[in-house]
Image (cartoon, rainbow, N blue to C red):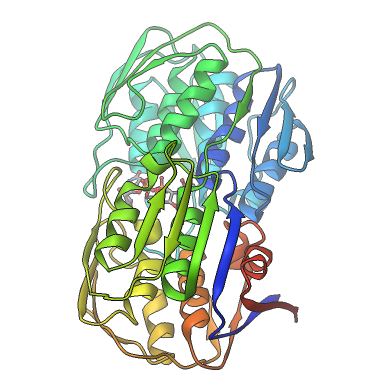
Length: 422
Ligand code: EPZ
């Protein structure tokens, strides 16, 4: 189990490239199940979550080749049962459900287990599959979906108590591509990753309109074909490095970004007093630590709102920002595991039912801390860059789930970090 040792206090500067999006790659890899032809997917980040997805596809019988970010998948002959041992490791494996059901008329996927960021039900995914005509049974911890006569288009509202569901929208959209007739998804998730998946599916010959809005219309087709696709930049990795640059930077350039996807994050960083400038095309940004800083209030919400996946990292930035900041996570109200560890480093945070009240302190001090989930770990790395002394972050496998070579990128920017194999 690796740990990251961060010697705080060094200044970061220079430029790095942002990787392809993990959360776009996962459903796109799963979507390759929808065709027997070869799919070539570029800029798939080398992180353990995409590796799990590739292992699941291989276990289903797909032929997969991977070489420096490019994945070629052939699902000529696949089974309809996703293996529990692999599925249980990653919640996003649920997105093989829609493609398997559409292609095979049957899908067996285990129910995702508990999750450290809070309760993560799949009721909306199942509601969608049922509306498309699938029969659903539960047996031995598995969900068994069957549609022997194929799926039929339907009108489906995917709004849950906390708003739309991202992977639920992906799952229903993928299943509906091969359904008979027209499917309308109301209250769909509008995240850029959903749009990227729709673009991939349309490249395969699907007929999807409205992706990226709250209403998606899918006209079912008889079959899909192979496609080549390049995954969008990872807006959360970009946001994390923007926060790092604001915390400890003397001018950091991030290449391969998408300005449009980063609007809410950019706004929050600028509001707290830092400088963010994009090039004309919006594909590269320069972030500089500001001089007059102030606390900000944040509330996470579905895209285009402030993303829950950038809540922990922004909290880490606000911990040493003068004034009071109020950070609310409306999507995952229990996603505050990082706060206990940040407090061990000297942060002044009070938690109150899905809200963190942060009083900015002048400095943080190093402490041994433990990563608890992907974004919480990133928050600890950020805080450690600014802390006095050496911070050891254990359980680094959490961060390796979603950040491609984070230690190498930080080293390139001049941070004093080392990965230690324990
Ligand atoms: C996706 O998860 C992301 N994962 C998460 O990123 C992200 O935090 C989340 O969307 C919200 O933006 C991937 O894309 C692989 P949801 P997803 O269904 O789709 C409730 C990261 O750090 N809900 O949009 O599983 C749910 O409890 C990860 O990279 C239901 O009630 O999340 C939550 O409150 C972690 N019923 C809200 O909807 C359902 O059936 C949004 O969750 C499904 C969800």
